[in-house]
Image (cartoon, rainbow over all chains, first blue to last red; front, top):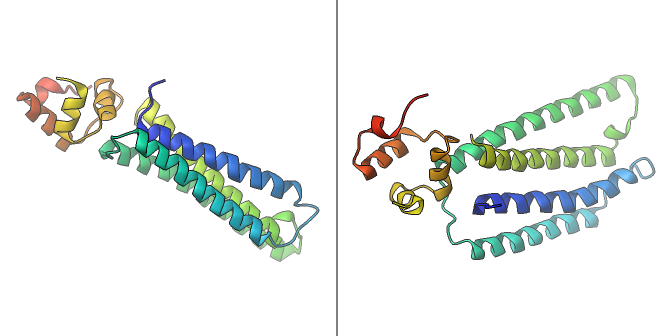
Length: 146
Length: 50
């Protein structure tokens, strides 16, 4: 399959996001009912630093292999369209979280979402899903048109 | 003229020229005028509204 530099770059970012954050969130949600405490600060820093290093290595490798990295109006339009989908998803997630907090405060019903550990990881999950939507829709528009 | 040459003259990527040819992207007026300028033809001879 003939892929442009942009598509390769997006695919790499999508893969790195799914791999690292997927691994971290899987571990976090597996232990959520057993350990409803604050997130491990060190583990989270390791995740972020690891993600930045992995992205820097992959993107540098792609930039060296692909000479043309010009960004034009089509790239900007695709990025804008995808950001709108991603933003819409994030807004819905934030509203759901806010309603959950209100319900918890009103009925004193402590669900997993409203513990600090749970809320932190749900927000991280929403953010990661929004990024996956952004990368995924960009790839879709590069293939199917915009 | 190759797609790469046209892309360089217009200031877009080769992928954008391919997308325009395949009817997967409608260019801005600026790019459309630049393409017509490269070919020295009126806009309506190059683009058709569907």
